[in-house]
Amino acid sequence: FALFSWGSSDGSFSSIDFSGLQLAAGTRLDTARLYLDGTVSVQAVPEPGTWALMLAGAGLVALRRPRRD
Image (cartoon, one colour):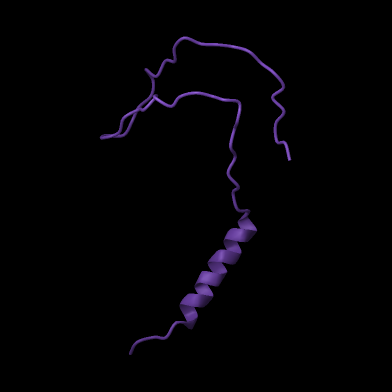
């Protein structure tokens, strides 16, 4: 399904200002692949009910494992 319909748009820019960006120690900003080709990827995020079922399943597995004496 289409989440967004971008239609058509034109525009350009010559620079991006990263002066307010604060990076963690030891990290760097790699702008070599900074582009937009019109494709936006969206990752699926599990719903809270899914998380609850996964946690309940993990809890049951933990309860069923053999205990060492």
